[in-house]
Length: 97
Image (cartoon, helix red, strand yellow):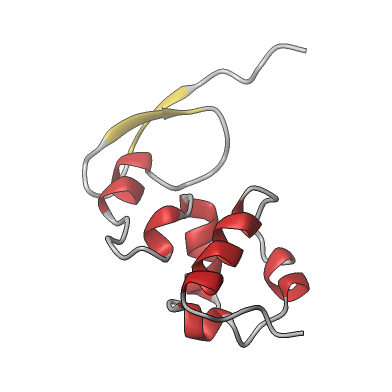
């Protein structure tokens, strides 16, 4: 099976980029919007958007959810969980049991 062909796209801000999927996210915009804080800033864009979409922007808010709830969010992958656990542990917190 051959990989899908990449197409040139232009986002609303005028950035040009190539994508092979239907994902509408401009990688340049996503990188520019990456937060500087240690919690969300360490996550890949899909995981960050998933948490922000649920209103989770701090480790304190993350601690009010179970691991299972977070892992069910679209955009969360297995490599994200250790980063979330580390962020919680650094703040003396953990996932809700």
